[in-house]
Amino acid sequence: MSDLPFHDTTDFENADRGFVAALEPAVVKGGDGRVVWDNDAYAFLEGDCPDTAHPSLWRQAQLCSRQGLYEVAEGIYQVRGLDLSNMTLVEGDTGVIVIDPLLSAETAAAALALYRRERGNRSVTGLIYTHSHADHFGGSRGALAEGEEDGVPILAPVGFLEHAVSENVYAGNAMTRRAVYMYGDRIEKAPDGQLGAGLGMTTSTGTITLIPPTVDITRTGQEETVDGVRIVFQITPGTEAPAEMNFLFPDRRALCLAENATHNMHNILTLRGAVVRDARIWSHYLDEAIELFGDSMDVAFASHHWPTWGAGNVVDFLAVQRDLYAYMHDQTLRLLNAGLTGPEIAEEIELPPALENSWHARGYYGSLSHNVKAIYQRYLGWFDGNPAHLWEHPPVAAATRYVECMGGADEVVGKAAKYAEQGDLRFAATLLNHVVFADGSDRQARSDLAAVYRRLGHGSENGTWRNFYLMGAMELEQGPDTNLLDPANPEVATALTVEQLVDSIAVRVDGPRSWDKDLVIDLDLTDQRTRHRLTLHNGALTRRATTDASPPRTPAGLTLTLTKPQLLGVFAGRGLDGVRTDGDTAVLDALFSVLAEADTSFPIVTP
Image (cartoon, rainbow, N blue to C red; front, side, top):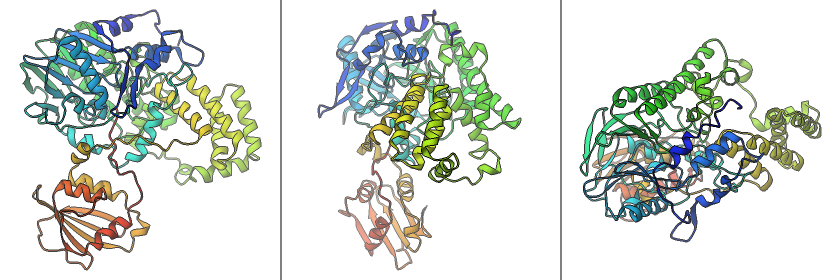
């Protein structure tokens, strides 16, 4: 850490460059008066780094907490510090093009209002989603209110809509729970509390919306003109998101890098959970961006953090980011093939000094430790090849046995205290975790584990690790917070395909309760002009498209003739109003009787 170039103030100069005005106070409220964003809560970051924070993470938080409207290039502006992500605004012939309208409609509206206050009341004449994570589309209604989207082109990479509504649908409840830990929005903002997430400060808690795209970007080199502004695209699927794209404004010599190159190491597998990303292809697309745009731009900006100015500086920035993901990928595979497991590789691998000492390659959001484990997982999965790990006891059963073998809870707590005193917080946490899992009512173990988690969090350079540790400490002492943010919105639900909707219902089927059920439901979607047959058999709900218009040939069969919005209503529990039925509606009741209780929202993906 002593080798880090703290004397280099370039990032601070770039983060402040082009400042126009701030939102004062930097507090955004919802229609009900609830605060959905408060950037002023981070005013403490103006002070010196305390003992309760890693100096490198403190520096990153100071940079990310800067807030206001900034000029990037002639006719290109960004609003930063009003959500986890940035909103970019590109002035056209008659209005303004909005790129990535933040996570919540409320914060997006505040950002747009700040821009209009300083640059005039330009109408939104185009909307661009760089990729399929919610902090880049969720505020769309803050940019274009209901009805205002008519005639406005809305551009997104091919596959955007499918991934935007599906990546978190199937495991949505678990991901939402883990996102609470990852972003730490419920932890007090304080020098010993939450001070960012590395990629930004935290997530807003307003209304998530989605206006579907009208223009698909399908190929690299595709050029579109929006409100007189020429844009040249590079599609980058499988990088930071399944559907993502970079693009150049050739007449402004400005390159948008979406979330493919930001001022930190990103996640190969985000701690909230997701499909493992491809570090190899990520590196390839960054190299391609250098080749495509290296001679055509003077500034590069992204959907998080601050821009980089100067063609040479941008190429150097992209080259380091390219090498970072390539090195992690290739060295993980080298060590994997040498017989090391994921945790062993995480302890063994080191970055080259040139990468290690580059501020924008530091692990503030992703980390070298969990990224190489993710790369291992992508290729070899969860099993490390050791037979002892093939059929281990689950956590509670294993913990009970470990505590018994180590002489009981008091003995284990005492040993953990000695390891903590010696500075081995990792093993102290492991020991205390066994005690808490063996007996969740053990107050001493819970208190000691919370203290260890706080020390681990305060020493972490990674913002999301810090949040996980501090959130864990808080819940050990206060109990779990079950009041999860509900990101449901009718527009988001409407964007689900019929197949996605059925699949989201299928994962709620309680298998053992439905083993003896034999049900068939035909869905005749009149507005889609499609038919789908749902079969519940052996505890599995499966689907297939069908052209068979005859009633299901089973005593437990039902045909529903309806529209897709009506289908959404049926599965949201609003009944069969307006739905034509052919067969016994008790079939539908039988299906609902075996669905596990679950949040009926459709969770949306954050970065």
